[in-house]
Length: 185
Image 1 (tube, rainbow, N blue to C red):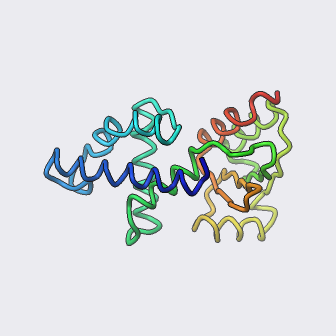
Image 2: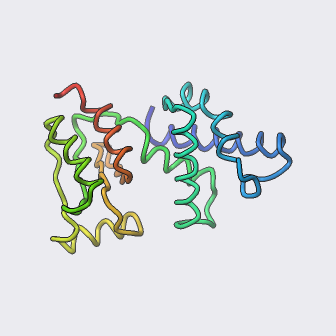
């Protein structure tokens, strides 16, 4: 499944979840403090079957809330469903051809989350370009332009099809690296 078709599939899943949530609770997501729990219950199986994304419930709740926070901070005027679908593709989708992808880690040498990711990179024996945003203003500017902030670590995945993904969150990066490159070790 291509990134674009996955995006469309996820957007439809999130749109259906929103409609089902409103019908079940008579309130929109924004007015329900437990919306993420409801959505996780509703979406876990469809995400696994249609999106090929397998989450335990607590992790899915976290991912939904994280995407919602990012939506509120970065683009609250956009379609919520499309924004969250984009975030899920960016952060949780498998690569189509991982061996051909170019990877770069934006990091700070003293950041404990960055160090955690770099340990896994070393353990897996991966050749990933390290981009210290403190040592290079260009790396910092690139990260700021792509993400709207300079929080690290962020894994930049440049796929052969020309698409770029900017994956934040150390645990998501580690999970991605282990899923896509763990067999190389």
